[in-house]
Structures are given as structure tokens and as C-alpha cells.
Image (cartoon, rainbow, N blue to C red; front, top):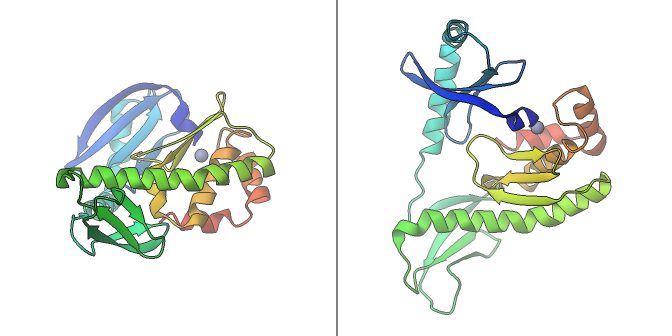
Length: 236
Ligand SMILES: [Zn+2]
């Protein structure tokens, strides 16, 4: 996802037909228009000298499409997770249920890896911290999966990474710093099936060989993970 690594020249907001659009100017050649699947936010990344008028015409010509996806993804992301017994949660591509317990001996949050995620009210739990605790759970669980997965794939691909990290990201599943061999992964991946996580891992590792999404990059993906499209589709 190399275009993200280019330095941001400026970031401004544009309002067209009641839609807020974040305009990011970078030293790139093409225009990228996207709706973030995690938030519904609209981003357009453009070469830094693109005239405003050209940009407004382009966005206006795609406004119906943007509106449709913006509405779809913002509705999806605002589905509220409530602190209540049997609240449905996603974990590794499956449906899990929140179980509220009260036991001083047990950890704050944990899972049976079957279908339950337990949250412990004992020891000064504050309900306002629930989402923070849940996100931390996803981050830690994803890290447990990623470490052996990255080790496995870097061996297969004969690569070396200097750092892997997990954090919540708004617009991408992973990122790769080519020169420093650093990979970041979105903690939201913990909600997705293992095959989807594996696709993102191989994708980001492939960027250590080829930074851009060109033919060579696709050839690398095809060679190491022939069914990568299946994993990509499972990201939803
Ligand atoms: Zn990429």
C-alpha cells in the first residue's frame, strides 16, 4: 500500500452536495478516490498540483456512487456495540457473544475461543472504558496471531522484517515501510477470518520486494499465495 507512504503535501476538506471529502495532496501521479470501509469517510488522494476545479468536476461526476457507499459504510460502522449480556461481537470471522462476569480472580477480558468473550466487572471496572478494553483485547489477540504468521511467511518468502505492530487504523488494513522493513496492521483485522489476515500479511510482506501495486507485485502474490483473491474477499 505504497502510495500511503508518500509524504502528505496538504490535507483539506471539501464539501460537495452535502458530502464531506478529505482531499490529500501528495507527490503522486494518479488520483485515488475511496470510501473507507471502516468509517464511511470519503478520501481523495491527488497529485499535489491538481486544480480545484478539475477535482470538483471529477468528484461531482461520481457523486451518486460516493453517496451510496458513504451511506452504506457509515451505517455499518455506527452499529453500536453495547455493554450488555450476549452482545454480538465479531472475532476471527465468527460470531461471539459478550458474557459479563464478576470474579476478582479472573482477568478483565478473555475468550474461550469457542463463542464467548468474557468481560469481568470485578476490580473497579468502569463501563465507559468498555470499548477501549475491547479494542485492546482485539489488538492483543491479533498480535498473538500475527507474530507466528509473519515469521512463517518471511521464512517462505526469504525476507526479514525489523518491526511489526498493531494499532487501530481508519482507512487501511496494513502498511509497510519499505526502507525500514516495518509493518503495521490494523487491530480491526482480529474480527476477520484467518485467511483474510494471512492475505494482508503476505500483501504487506510482498511490499518489501515491490513497493507499488504493479504487475510485478501481483506476480509475487500469485507465486506465494495463489488464492490471495479469496482472502481479500473475506476482508468484507
Ligand atoms: Zn499494498
